[in-house]
Amino acid sequence: MLDARSLLVYCTTNQALRCAPIADRPHGGLVVAPHQGDERGLLETAAYLRGRARFGAPLLLDAARYAGPDRLPASAPFNPRWLRRQRELGLPVLTDSGYVDAGDERGLAGILRRTMAIPGAVAVLPLHPAWLRDRLHLSVLTGHLRAAAVPVALVLEARADPFALDGCVPGLLAVLGCGVPVLLLRCDLSSLGALCHGAVAAAVGTVAALRHLAPREADGVRPPSTIFRPTMSYRRISAIQRAKRTRPDPRLWSCDCPVCAGRDLDWMAGLGDREREVPAFEHAAAVLFALRDELLGDGRPLPRAARDWAARCAEAAFREWELGWTVTPMLRHWRDTGPNPVDLRLAS
Ligand SMILES: [Zn+2]
View 1 (cartoon, protein in one colour):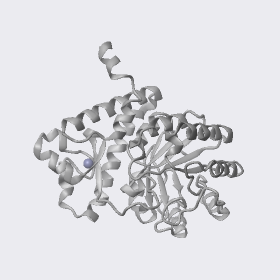
View 2 (cartoon, rainbow, N blue to C red; view 1 turned 90 degrees about the vertical axis):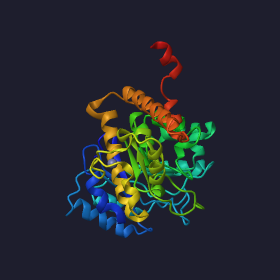
View 3 (spheres, protein in one colour; view 1 turned 60 degrees about the vertical axis):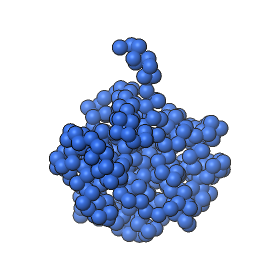
View 4 (tube, helix red, strand yellow; view 1 turned 45 degrees about the horizontal axis):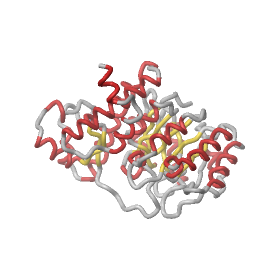
């Protein structure tokens, strides 16, 4: 059902109809989570997308019971009705897992064991970042993944981008090396890094709150940001507008994606926060899909894609530095997965 190396859009039910045309493309797809916990509404929307809306790309549902103030722990049992409804709709079956806290090996093992008993199911693993960052946690995690041998969909908890944290990128690469199909849900540009290193699929959130798993005590809504392609990072529109004043180079700021249509990216500054949310995501999705196709299109071999990705992260980090911006930590971490830049210089 999923093409290998699919880039998916991750949204909530209330955004699904707007996101469907963006996600319905080759190597695309949609992951939908309930809006305000309404699972019934989610299932109805999924039935509509698969039926009358003729949504043809892969469609996955995430119950997201691991999120929010009333999130469930990893020990919570799966809801058989949730699993059955996904199957009835002809969708891949994702478990409605609870949150796997640091050190909760029993919870982790329980999710994987219960998933093994459901034919074809994908174990959703909403993880405290220690599972990727801490060596002992990581070896326990990879041991269980190899033993269970079921496909997994990772969701990582962090206040902002989990791949900004030291150790998360190498930890993800170790999980990708376990020999089980891996999906990454609720992420941002690191989706591309994951795909270049062998993830089956990675899903990019429409808004900041859907680009990671916020800790329970997380703060509220943030103003929309979007991807500035030259630096491959999410930036507030106001920051892009300010930077443009200092370097008025038209080639740097204009964008040819369908929503910007050749305008400078800061055209969105004229919109209010709520009005900006949709074009900010449409632009980001266009950039991400274009990058995905450049990195992975035409069956390019993964090692080459992974090298290109690291090189692009290095370039983007350099451009951030040139613009006087703080270098986005995610870019540094992915850059460091590539060949040593000093060696490159010696080789040329
Ligand atoms: Zn654009």
